Length: 371
Image (cartoon, rainbow, N blue to C red; front, side):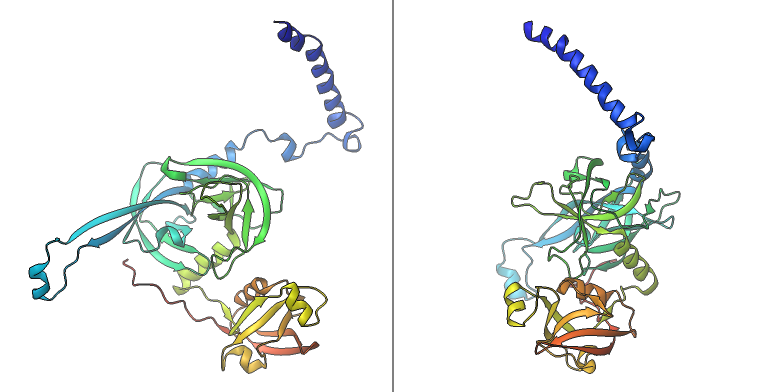
């Protein structure tokens, strides 16, 4: 009782005085040059409007795969002695997807629907439908689906790249518990994890768990800024590091899959690796930046332009290249038949090469997919 009285007596008075001082500094005449502080970050107490707009456009995905057990050979001699009958069972997995057009197009992660024989979509309003796989892009771990339903809620695709420190919300179906919203900030941009060929991930500490893959990462206005893709964790559980493919990447993939049935990318015909400090020292570089050309495809665009294995790719069109990932992303993002100027270091001497970008060959699928 004494402690309770202490907290309700002088301590309460101190709290009131402290709040008054805090208000004076933030809103009084001396704050912000005499202007009241009215930034969104300071005034926002709820993100319900953003969630109410975006959440209906985030759906749950159930994929099924037929697995054959104890399949007997075609040879009758073997069938005669096989005691175990042929059995089939269906495996189901959970994920998320985002409705991005009134025509029923939905973005999700490729790994969510990989090897699926059937994709079922459960909408926020209770409707369900079988989805058609419009196209896939394993090189960014993205896929495009379409459902045959009308009056669909559609999310807005953001047109601005997020900044580190921006508040973001992750929406999905983690662990199959139902639609869930978590909040965090953008922790970093331009992350490379080595899980896809072309990566430019947004890193966030908004909780993303199993089942969130393919779901939406939105800003505080409800705009889609990324497709939740992966987490970085030693034990498989959430440890504060989630990653999403940027909306700009998803928009490019979606447009190409609709218009061409595949993603069109530039191709130079090289393999580029990062420059380590040891490599930088051996090549006489001032810092560990750029990409080391380790392989050149014969008669490819790079080979025809004079690029050689062992060259250091320091820049493209006068823009310095940070590492091998950035170099490959720049090349892939360049339209085929476009001329590029490569800034190269060969035998410790800078030089410039002119190349014409080709079309990146299509990635062969692991197996035929059912539509």
